[in-house]
Image 1: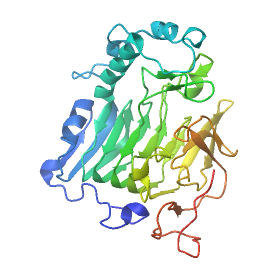
Image 2: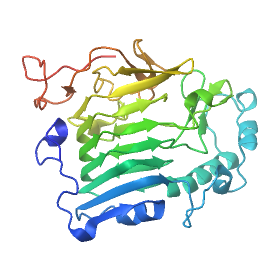
Image 3: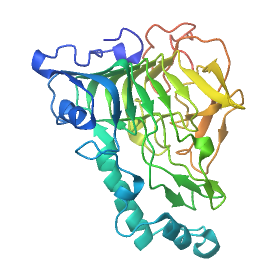
Image 4: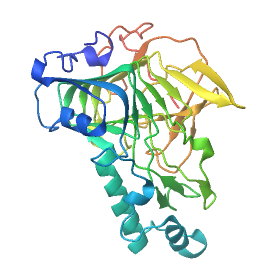
Length: 350
């Protein structure tokens, strides 16, 4: 359990601490992990230990699945690019018709393999350098979850969607995070590492003069999630790191999104070398959400026309410190240093 930050408030976050012997499992492949997580509506306390490397892009026999294996309804990237080339399709509407329907169906097929829902009252712990490759853990409308000591690698989307209306030049948008929190409460994410493995964003091609983005966030806290602590995590070589909130129009977020983040470390590659620096103490933004980019040291900037796009909070090399920001509540943060007169650390603006 955690005694730090928002996850420790009210009922606290204990995960699977009360699991009986029947609900403590050690797993080493995708099928075992799915079975251990069980029905996401099952409220029984459970602890899942992960050993070795678990790949999400495998079939039920644990054989690797490639992007071609998910493609359905005749989908090919070449046909998709030809159908929605802005030179002929234009930039005033989103793709529709058979090529887009084939892309969506293919993406749905991959999602069924890589998106794994986590049930309430669950602790997931990595053992001896455990890794989840190409897996999106989804904590959706559940309470009391702990995720610790794991390395998350390369949750890539084989079928990004082109949206010419996204920003002034259009953007490619992908589907999967490493960890997604949707309307989740009391979640502690601790001592994990996040990276893109063999498919870093910097090596992806461009189509329609825009980066072909096969990754979404590494850790997204959205859709009125609340009471979350993110501690001692390492984020590396990624363009969109963390999202808090989902949209300026998401009225359900009001009074929610109370999240503590501390001791996060951003690591980027500079001319082939690793540059490591502690993150800033930026927190939930007034526009309801923000992503931290893989680059460091510069001010935040908007990269699209909607606030529900990458408002990228640039991580800086300031002195590391633990802090809590609460943008829409008067409740004091837990164990916060350097608070305001009202007992709450103010949010950094963007």
